[in-house]
Length: 128
Image (cartoon, rainbow, N blue to C red; front, side, top):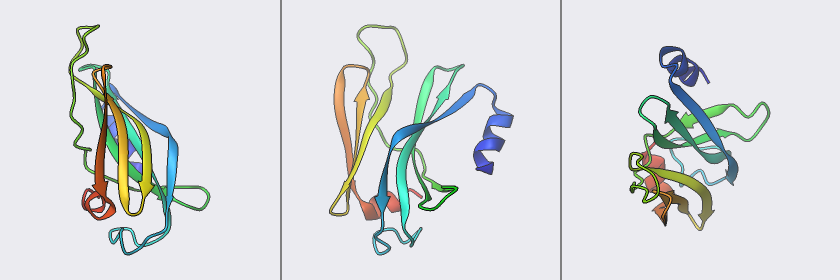
């Protein structure tokens, strides 16, 4: 995915990491910015200098070689500080589910709270 390759070339301190979970989406009416079957997943970019995470949703092809098709704007996660270490406030995506055109993105905040970002497929599509 050339945009990530360019980002990495220009910012060697950034690490782009995907998630282990993907959800198949085949609802062209709910995903007008990508009206075709695809997989939905989450990724994060870790800044090794600032020690911060940024999270994004991404869509990739449902056929080999499973190319990335779209990356969202940053997900609006609510961060928290950790009570156990002096790190920056953070959040970390841990799960993804799609049920009845509702997307639930589960995440931990500050290693102390479980949270969920819940939105309609239409709202998520606006982030792409």
